[in-house]
Amino acid sequence: MEYLKEYLRYLGSKGYTDGTISAYETTLRQLGFFIQKQEQQISGQDIQSWHRHLKTLPIHKSTVAIKLKSVKRYFSYLIKRQHLLMDPSRDEEIVYEKEGLIKEILTLSEITLLLDSPSKGIIGIRDKAVMEVLYSTGIRGCELCALDVQDINLKENEIHIKDLKTRTERRLPLARKSKAVLRQYFLTGREALSRRERIESAVFLNRFGRRLNKQWIQSIIKKHIKRSGIQKHITPHCLRHSCATHMLQNGAPLKIIQQMLGHKSLRSTEIYTRVLKAEMKPSKPRRDKKKFKRHG
Image 1: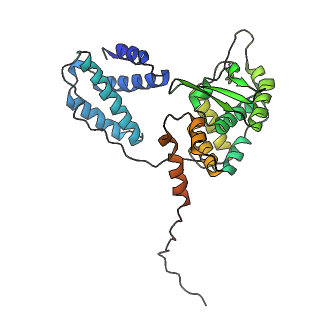
Image 2: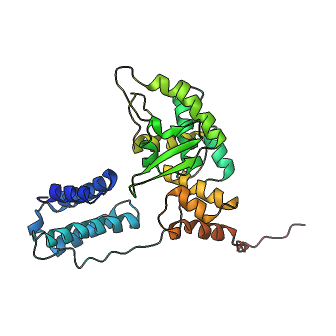
Image 3: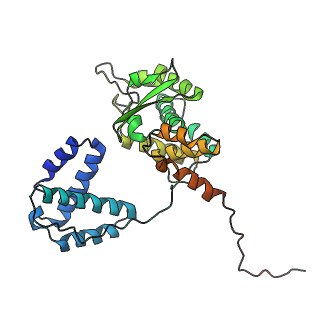
């Protein structure tokens, strides 16, 4: 893709996060690999063929829509910069299909099982701290990865979050249990994981003494979901959803939840009220179609 690097620099200049830019790059490289043409040679048929190919992959329909939107934005940029005269993606329609409000939410008993799953060893202490902070604060996985030691204030029971999505910052209270778990991690787990020969400012470290990334966080969650016997597909974001839902169940105002999650709009937070309403609807009694014979 001839203009890909230029486009990625443009996204960076507009304040897009590294994660978003990486997602654009991945999608556009996938398109280039599939079509095997430079931008000026790509036709509407090529985009249509690639779109059909995406639909055969084991990915969500919403992911297909996001990828197509990314491609459309790329070609729109090329038109504006006069690199192209016509947009080959113009006839492809983006279809968003609802796949449920929020996929998986853990119950309080499942949260207890999950947080009690890690061992008492160094890695277990770190894993427990990771999951405790994710659930008790409702922060995103990328925000947890970005935490530096100076962002945690155990004396003031406060955690400083750098919102990489909106380029804003917020301060959240630390629950008593979270504070205790973090204190133990700082005194034992992190001390053991850190490497003396290098200075690492990150709060959460991998076994090599370096900052945890999103893949490490995902693997930690996956490991302990399996260990605790929970039969759900849980991601770090599911702990964020669970936190917000449980807060709402306990009577927390939507405005407080909005501020805690860092949502710009209250409409983003209102999804949790719809989830609760859906859960509270009485289920219709099932009629067993099988006819049972009377005995006796």
